[in-house]
Length: 442
Image (cartoon, rainbow, N blue to C red; front, top):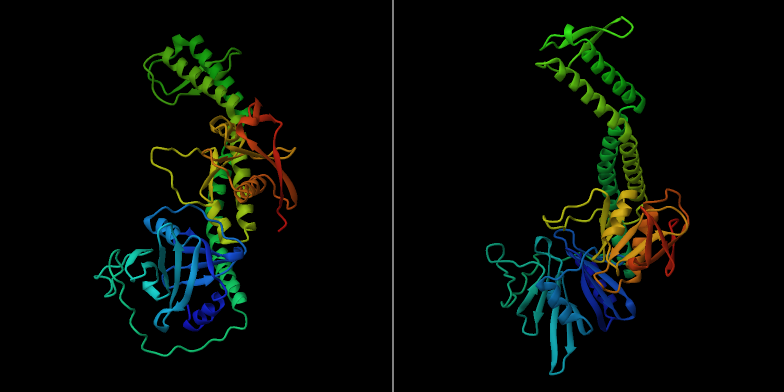
């Protein structure tokens, strides 16, 4: 980030007097909510740090590391005493105070936009390091960032920075987000859609390779007939033959090929009866496999469509969460799992997935379903906590995204799982519920 831009952003920040809330929304992004719900994001990725504003930025998980705990303790509801650049360098410092029951506690929150040493550091009033996003030892830099140690001043830059005047700082902050997000969004879409299309092709190949029921029925009847012919011609058949020619009931010659050698005619006949039985069973259950594959294919197509329609990177990150399950918990192939603001949101891929969700959900979990039409079932795992309206709306959007290809305005009902009465399979009744409108046109 350019020093000239930081200077102008500091001037912009002077209007704020209070930090209402502060927390990480991603591994390297800190969100600060000032008074009047004005929000600012600090992206502290090495070599790509920036400050930006955006309409919304979903928090995929709740961070509880020592850094995050102290960040909340020291700066939530803190008064801003001063905002400045340390030593005229690319180090933005907030000086704050929080009034406790005993005394006023002063702290420094330091955002360092310094290339590979980019960092967020929490200091006490004596500039002793309390915590940091990244701890730096003496082997990595002469300027150690370690809890309990005094933070040394950064070296003075050996050059004079050029000035890059901004006409509108706030517009610049929004543009910083949009420019990078559009580039990142395009790249992520290509990557994720390629991954999904690979899965889709695999499923389509499996579907194309399915046997035909009529052919299987014909095979079953043929193998059964061959088995009976073996028994009727036992005196003509010799053990260990792989190809046998016997008389059919009408006197015609029939050549029968076995898949391996058998020591007796009875075993030969039994092998044919077994193949007949398997072909018949395969034919009777083939429609279940076909329906299952079609449902999975439809789900992947909806997934691809949802990724293609994503308007921001946060939506892609929501659709492809990091694997945070423990090794002891086996993920179901019937259910898609997402994380919204730290809440687990599960979506049934097909009817079996919907049934699994209904069976496993707790009484206080929230169930969602599109109003008066077939749709995917969605469950928000609440852990008996109140779920923010934003999370419910995001979950309702997923319900629509994985049901409808067409854009439009749709209604989604939601209610605690205890209010849902299962009638048959995934068919349910529910009386007490709320409805939320989802507009997929925007």
